[in-house]
Amino acid sequence: MNGGVVAPPGSGLWRLTDEMNSTEDGLRSLDSEYLRRLHQHDLRDNQCSSMVVKHIKAPVNLVWSLVRRFDQPEKYKPFISRCVVQNNNLEIGSVREVNVKSGLPATTSTERLEKLDDNQRLLSVKIVGGDHRLKNYSSILTVHPETIDGQPGTLVVESFAVDIPEGNTDDETCYFIKALLKCNLKSLADVSERLASQELTP
Image 1 (cartoon, rainbow, N blue to C red):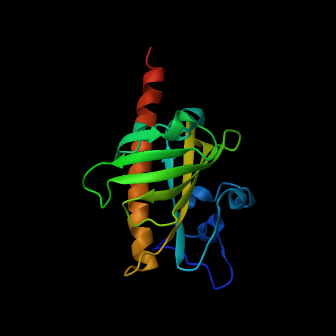
Image 2 (image 1 turned 30 degrees about the vertical axis):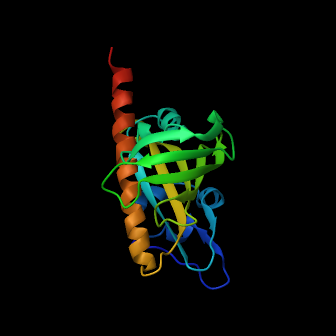
């Protein structure tokens, strides 16, 4: 899959399954209609959407226990140095202030919890402020059980929608964001697999 996906004029909708027949082999074993309902973004003009996937050699409940912590993204996201949830509330609509490590074109990000569903193992977050160029960014992350080498594993799917900054193309925008997400999911895999191995150690 190269670059992002821009919705046709008037469609206002992007679905993960629009890209399932590309190179993301890990998605083909999942129910497409189920994923379509989970990963759906209402696109506005001048927005792009895309997604990344990651296979993790750790049980789904362990991976989800890390992902669902809206108040502690630094547990696996390597670019976050600090996170504070406003009013110490953790519920739909809660807002977190994130400090970003040096090396990225940003220092802070303000993010709102849009949805947290433990049954579907779904986390949705929207960026509502910060000193960066990711305007109207929203993401949906889901985790799904699978079997890897005969052992319990997890497939993580993360999709997003975002404004295309002035002076950039949709491909450039999605390439940058997907690079960041891939780093996050690699770190999630590293942390999850390390914890899983510790649980197996006598």
